[in-house]
Length: 257
Image (cartoon, rainbow, N blue to C red; front, top):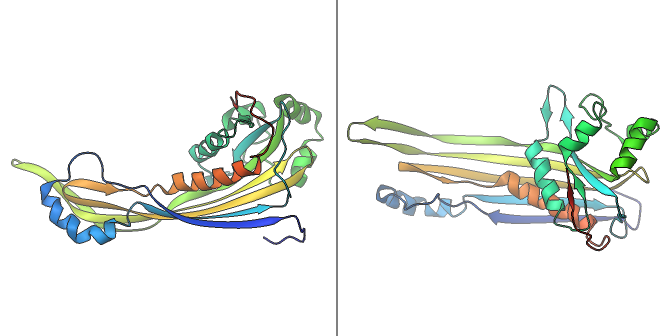
């Protein structure tokens, strides 16, 4: 994203994190030979490559006053898709690591403002948000709840490729599984911060995370799972928290239902 403002910044951060590991318990002896043959591949299993882009038009951190709060909302397209609620909650929990922030839970906010933030009526642009705040009932509810910043998150996690197969069988002598399978997941999300006091965009963060997981089965299945969505949450959540990092000193009690 380009800007003519000299005070704006664009940051790009790319990293690789490896979180996958075999499940608990000893690896079956029958699988040890296969593991040694597949070791170069499995060393890369469970790894996620994450790229985070941050656009910040502000020369300093975002200020937040006493009693002012933040809400994180997921975009929903009626009948098409929704940004996963668990991903939104993951970002909310990440933001609460900044003790100066009070973050309102998404469900509580949506219930409080029903039906104005349902998929068909939610504001897609700041112009629509500005118009909604001319309605006294909405403006009074927003003020009573203390919402200063609204963070909209749009995107999803999907399986983009898969291959291989695993089959299992039972017999009087016992049972087991045999095979090898892999699948790749991609998480792509964008978060946009709205300052409701200024009715202006205060920044945005984009994250793209990719990772491949494996399932090796020689006797017992051994999974090597890439935490793609979790790493995407960590990347976008850390960057969003950085927008507020130098806000007011900690005041405790930073999560509100």
